[in-house]
Image 1: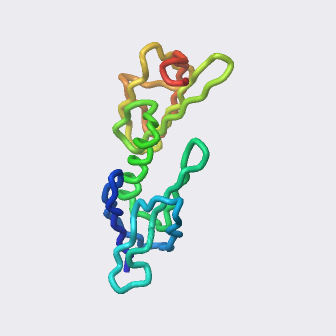
Image 2: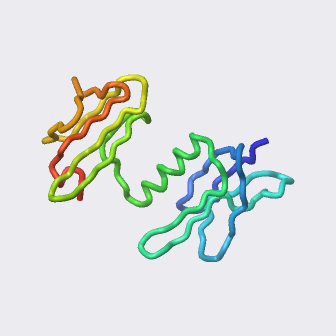
Amino acid sequence: MPNPIIGEVTQTAHEIDAAAPVLANSVPDAADTRVIARYADPGGWLDKKPAIVTRSVGKGSITYVGAWLDAAAMRVLAGRMLDEAAVATILPVASPDIEVSARAGAERCVLVVINHGVAAQPVSLPSGARLVVGAVPGGTLPAHGVAVAEVPRDAVCR
């Protein structure tokens, strides 16, 4: 039976409604950590123990997730962590099948866009993009397609 996880009630934490069906570990509840979520397992050994903790390190932070979260909970957690770190998406994409990465060097910036899915997906390249590899006919990346575009450095790579 999965161990449910509930969000810790703090000013910045939002509830994470999840189940940990594969792996569940209790993680330390130390003075220098902030508990993001605790287990809700009434009568169980994990009840109210930390499931997800974070702590400041240098200019950033490290977060430990002591459970194998379901996909929906992982999206919520990852989204919140990206928001808190002020990390913006490279390109707005609607499909989880699309992977976008930026590479910079030698005063150039390129985007690598990969469609891992079995269907074509819409992709909107930034203004001034020049395709180097692949094709995006009608703003659509074919199934299993790869496109590499050189883009203005200040558009994506900072």
